[in-house]
Amino acid sequence: EIVMTQSPATLSVSPGKRATLSCRASQNISSNLAWYQQKPGQAPRLLIYGASTRATGISARFSGSGSGTEFTVTISSLQSEDLAVYYCQQYNDWPMYTFGQGTKLEIK
Amino acid sequence: QVQLVESGGGVVQPGTSLRLSCTASGFPFTLYDMHWVRQAPGKGLEWVAVIWYDISNKYYADSVKGRFAISRDNSKNTMYLQMNSLRAEDTAVYYCARDRVSKGRGHDPFDIWGQGTMVTVSS
Image (cartoon, rainbow over the protein chains, first blue to last red):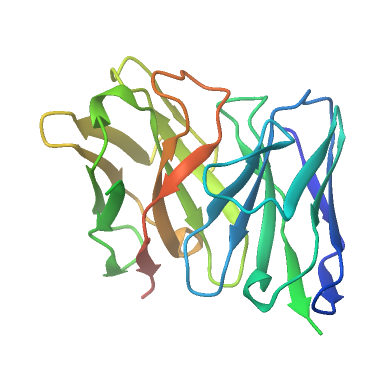
């Protein structure tokens, strides 16, 4: 099983600043990496797939990068609505899809 | 409007069974692989099972293999999860989710999610 490790566990960022979240895979997953946003009390929402492609309707403030085992998602100009837990997911080793444990993004 | 709606959750005792349903609307259900994903209270996401659009394949997480069964009725735009021999550790919100690409047969993330249905296993 491919283990996905996210860091940090919690990130506190001021409005208008940039937030960078990281995800590491225990083995090479090429670019088969997705990012999800889960706001309190809601279902997850797909943000990024293919490591760097924004999903339909996702703001250009969200950008993804990386390949192989190291990945990041960056949220530029943080807004209060970005308060959420962010999960990475590998879909290279299907059907054994695995998620990271999540990064909780707090707004200072 | 593209939508997934889960139902069937509830409180059950350990060792018993429960069947969840996921009804789709607003897209050609018969063309998409469908998944169940669960989230224990205060925890992260865990993929549970997938069924291909043509029902030719089904796969399960090791944690539920042999106890859960995924199925679908394409004539009713509905997917199911039959959960048997339930354990306390199966307590979670269960989400159904759609593959991003039609007829994907794997290698795709999940682009549409339902609102979830809560399953509590407790004596």
